[in-house]
Amino acid sequence: MKSKYLILIFLFSLNCIFAQEFAVINDIDGYTNVRSESNRNSKILDKLNNGHLICVMNPEGNWLNIDYALNKNEIKVGYAYKDRIKLISEYDEIPNLEEKDKEIIFSNKIIEVKVVESKFDKNNHSFNYVKNYPNQILKIDGNDYWGTDGEMPKTEYRSITIIFNNSKLQLPKEALENLYEPNLSSTKVNFDKDNDTIYISAMNSDGAGGYLVIWKIVKGKYLERFVTYGF
Image (tube, rainbow, N blue to C red; front, top):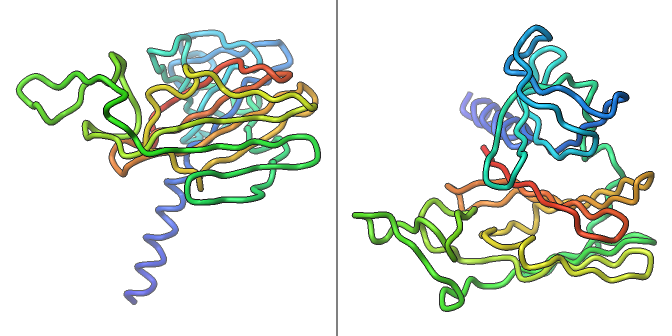
């Protein structure tokens, strides 16, 4: 009986882990409406153009609850019709070729992606602390941050390098800043060959400060990232 109970807990935890997934808007009209509730009569909150990065979860019939952002400082929530989105996992997955202690490499015949992490060096950063709680970090380098719940981070991204069509691209500093406790084993790379678009995504956490991040590289150029809360 105990073993059955443990199996049920394990299956439930897997469900939670995969309850969120990155996607893009993919509508024949070129955009889709984000609504306040899971029905066509509810208020339109925003209109998102094709290619807009979102995170989907909690299906309700033909609708999906989504996280999205119109700027990097505000995560919004709403509902989108499921036929108007395409999951990132539906694009070709670039296989994991090699994983070491501090780096992971993905590669096929035309794409290579190398993700490297390093130890967090607090001497290279500045900190603001929560008033009356001097051990709780409020901001790092003047910014909100991801990966811990107020504690000092232990690791950070060092670099992400992409080789595509014989060109080499290293993601800029702003693509990696304020992202801590990377989990290389959770990293995935997908390729939309019709639009020459590479997606690199990961689920990162120290246990309490869970988050999901995805980077979008179009035709060999870094375009954007989207970060949202993980559960």
